[in-house]
Image (cartoon, rainbow over all chains, first blue to last red; front, side):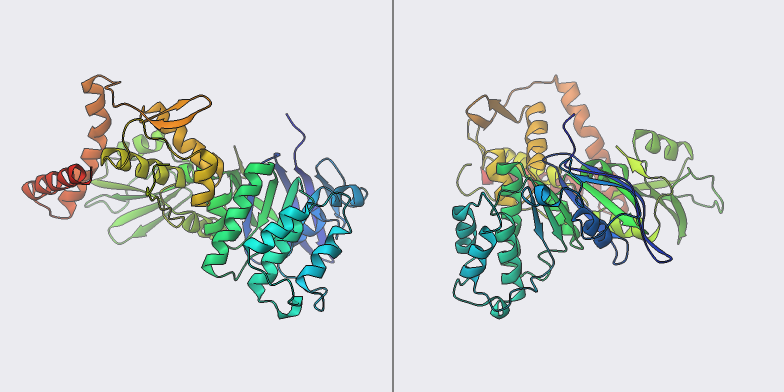
Length: 299
Length: 132
């Protein structure tokens, strides 16, 4: 097996008495697109900050491209791209200046790629950073993060608040980079739709732990909502689901290990009617945030 | 890809994206918008156009190939396959039976009479013919 692009083992990070990340294991293979989802305060930003070397772990280890973000800081920066949520620095610099400025930090800089993206995004080169819209700043950050052909691209809630047309271009660029450069992409996002489009694998972080960490298709395939009707039975024997609730005259089961066996198990309880419904990723993520599975699931 | 073929992806749908791609390509073939021998976009092109992960498109193509809807000619790309009866008729019908059962059950619960259901099926089949 290749060396993983991201290898986090037993990561803990405490702030005083607060544990922000609580025993996190996470592995992302080279070339994968990984989407990390979770509520504010779930530990996404803390995790990312330890990956970037901004924070030291309280316990556990973090390796990106086989390197330690704290000790191999410079070696890692040459191979890593980072797109933060917003660009706060250098408000006085013009777009054209900041691209030259960024290039100076790297031995290898693909001017053609960056200028091409600036043209494609139609960013005004004469305008100062502080005069750009939030969407334009996000586009500029993405273009700058790609100048040195990073092997790994980290995005932190990046591109939130883009208008639909710009979002479309943004997603195209991410898809192209993953395909053509084989860049591993790790994105922390609230945008479930976007993650569903671009990710191979997703993680759901709750209370500093992953409650979901698996291939997107497999995750969707194993989760179903099953609705069963038993006419005239007040307490039927139901198959054991993650959660069960009564809904009018029917029973609603949140099933997280669905498969052919499940359908058979439902039929064996002789319901008068049954419905098995696929769920959207949005609904599944909300379910898992509200009621995490007790066991971490891996595939 | 054959010019003008429009696919659309709804990431909010419960249907996985690879299944959406697959279903729409199958419909395009069934309706004659794609004909045997027509070239499909490369995985790369379609992934960028639809803005979805390349593995998603690759999976849709792989399954379409397994179902003999398309064929891959090494070095040349993916093409709509000649329609061949690659399964014996009983097996082909069996593949559809589950879908028909689900449809019949839905119709029952929506109080759609059997004649109405059959008329609807005929109308939709007719529409496929017209599109071609």
